Amino acid sequence: MKKLIYLLVAGFLIASCAESKTVTVTVTNSTSSDRMNEMVEVAMNEVASKLKLADTAQIVVLDADGQQVPYQITYDEKIIFQVSVKGNGTAAYTIQSGTPDVFNVKACGKYYPERLDDVAWENDLVAFRTYGPALQAKGEQAFGYDVWTKRDTTDPVVEARYAMELNPETLAKIDSLTKTNPEAAKELRAATSYHVDHGNGLDCYKVGPTLGGGTAALMVGDTIIYPYCYKTQEILDNGPLRFTVKLVYNPLTVKGDASVVETRVITLDSGSHMNKTVVSYSNLKESISVAVGIVLHEPNGEVLANAQKGYITYVDPTDNINNNNGKIFVGAAFPANVKEAKSVLFSAKEKEQRGGADGHVLAISDYIPGSDYTYYWGAAWSKANIKDAAQWNEYLANFTVKIRNPLTVTIK
Image (cartoon, rainbow, N blue to C red; front, side, top):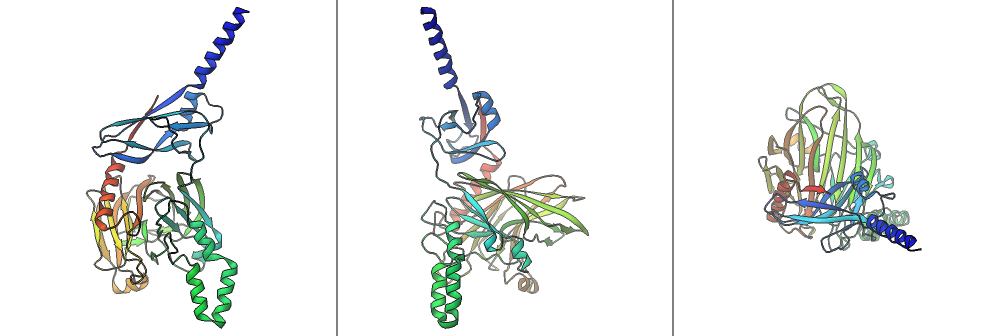
């Protein structure tokens, strides 16, 4: 009997040790600035192997105080979560078996066939969209990314905006009123349009036939090869902390070769104003320039173009400067060296072709065939958390330092 008790106790201790096994994630900050709420990645297969997990969904991530940290397992099998690390310091997080809390969705997106194949996405700070084949089939030229502003909420808002904008009953009523009471039709459209701020922001950014809010495009000499709307889309991650979409485009004609196909993978994390974008071009035969552009809606607008430090910014006046829409701050940042950064204004003829836009601020780099070109682009709004150009430029400067000096993550 005593031997049986010993065996039972030993078995309990072994089981307890197995259940209490943990993985320690140490995050090191090599910069002198504090890194707050920054996303890191850990390989899921390595954690699962160390914890001997049968069900990889049943883990928890804990901070130094033992409190659960929201996390997500991504399409490429990474555990992502936000960390805070003091300048030149380290921080430790623990991953172990357990039942995770329910986390609020802070980054998400959707394909909207009902709105001409838009793909739109957002996080707790800002929202974006890109245009699809149904829009291209209509002949409308919209090459670039669109920016949707957000304020006074960290919850998702984009799906509700589309639902209000595209409600069939409302649209039918507007159509009917247009024939009998145009003023009432106008009022109802304003009351349901996402181009009007109903309390949490709006779409007041003008893309037109330009590169919009930070699209990449190949260049031959000084000529931009404008990409059209995407051909196919695949949403790879959809919250709660990261949204990722893969876009494949119709073939481009580059130096007479009509077989060059562009692929983009766009990722937006919670807590960031910036989308990470990885671009590749298949079938290119030689190195070529690639430019990231932000459309200019003033010939002498507030632009910062710093090739050495690796970022560009622009203060956009919005599509209705007299409507108290504030200012939209747009920018792009580059982890690798930028060859040239500058403003390029359109000729009078091209200005007419580009919907009245005045030009682009461009950051130009070299693209080597077979490689991935990675950069970041995004926006903020003066009616939300970033109030002026100085604050936005500081954000981009700090952000560029971070992507050029990533946090170091080790696990044991």
